[in-house]
Structures are given as structure tokens and as C-alpha cells.
Length: 217
Ligand code: GRF
Image 1 (tube, helix red, strand yellow):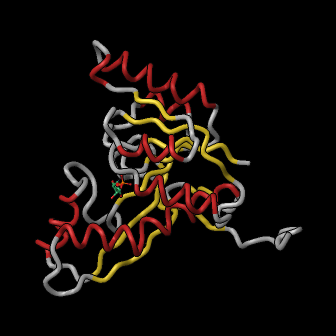
Image 2 (cartoon, protein in one colour):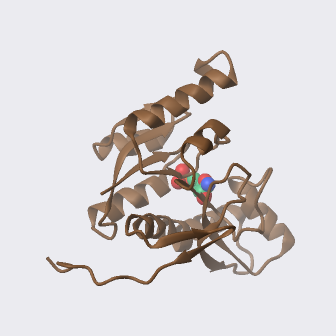
């Protein structure tokens, strides 16, 4: 059983998608051991508690320096002994000490098709506003490994979403969540739990599914 720790700053709909896919056994080989938020008011914390998952807030505002916060975050992660850290709308730049402690074990969901509309300044609604401004006809979501850069790690899964005429940025944000994010994030977790994601330098390979014993039991 892959022990997953989820970091989330806001509404936690991606966290909810993971919780739901574990409940309905789409994710069969992983469980969430802890949720961490930097924001005491994050609804993600409520969602975790409602699902019986230990949830804690580790806020930069509670520490005198960034270094002390970084160490507290690392400690909060270490305590749960996770096999995988999932950044699901975590609005804190993940500290290098965490990346170094968990190489190849941190993934992030980004609401665009990387390398489009990613990197500095591309977060939240801004990503969708920029996509509409540029007039692209297709956008989507990307799950990728975190390597210390901004949205720069090896890509695991991507899913495209069409952009209809006249859609607003808010509507597009919801469409990308429904049609892409809530699907590929749980899917990536299950693939990793099954040992089917192989990193190969800047890219990844998805290995074919093996026959699983007792699949229907
Ligand atoms: C999502 O759009 C995700 O792609 C981005 O932040 C948002 C988080 O939404 N990184 P939620 O908290 O999961 O509802």
C-alpha cells in the first residue's frame, strides 16, 4: 500500500477526487496518511477530517524565518513517512530540503498542458485567463514530478480539454478540473502505486498493466 501525503492550500477538490477514487477502489494500492495545508482556513483540511484523514496546518506565518518554516514542513512530512507526496493546489514553493529528501517522490497537478501556461506567475485563475488571452483552442492539465524547478519536472500524464467560444476563465477552470484534473491526478497515483511509472531523465514511461491476481475479488 503506497502511503500518500497530500499538500493543499485551498478548496481541495483534487484532494476530494483522490479520496473518492480510493473509496470506490479506482485507486486500489494507495491510501492517504496525512494532509498538510499552509492555510488554516483551507477547506481541504475539512475534507480530510470528514474522510477521517489526519490533517494539519503548517503556516509560514507561524515561523520567524522561511528556513524555520521549511524545516517544520519537512518534519510534518517526515512524521507521516510517506512514499509519495502529492501537491494538489499547494501554493507554497516546495522547499529544496523537501525535494532533496524525497527525490522522485513528489508530484504536482498543473491546470494547463505544460510547457504552455506554466512557470512563474501561472497559478490559479491566471493560467486560464492567459490561455483565453492567447486564444488557444485546447488546454488541459498535467501531472508531473517535482524536481525543484517551477513546473519543470518529468511529465507523467496530460489530458486535453477543448475551449469553446465565449467561455469565461472561471468556467474554463471548472471545465479543466472536471474533464482533466480530477481524472489524471488519481490515475497518476494509482499508476505510481502499481509501479508502472518509470522515470527516464527528463521524461517518464508508463509500463503496461500486469495481470493482477484476484482482480475481481
Ligand atoms: C487546481 O486547479 C490545481 O491544478 C492547481 O490548483 C488548483 C487547486 O484546486 N494547482 P483544488 O484546491 O484542488 O480545488
